[in-house]
Length: 64
Image 1: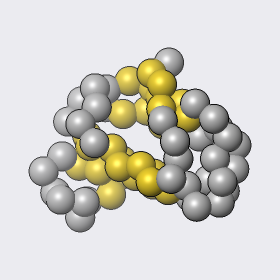
Image 2 (image 1 turned 135 degrees about the horizontal axis):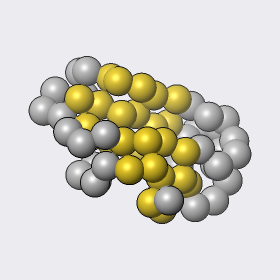
Image 3 (image 1 turned 30 degrees about the vertical axis):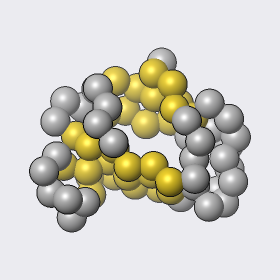
């Protein structure tokens, strides 16, 4: 997902199938900087310039 740098939080509580990953840009997902399967709650991430973000089954995210 092409997203600008900053802090983001999930808009709603997530289930056990939520997965997110912060990736080095241009690596096609091969260079994971950080990732998690939070299993619940309202996950939050911080993205730096030049990073890509992947999210599955976590709903939508809002910049904080």
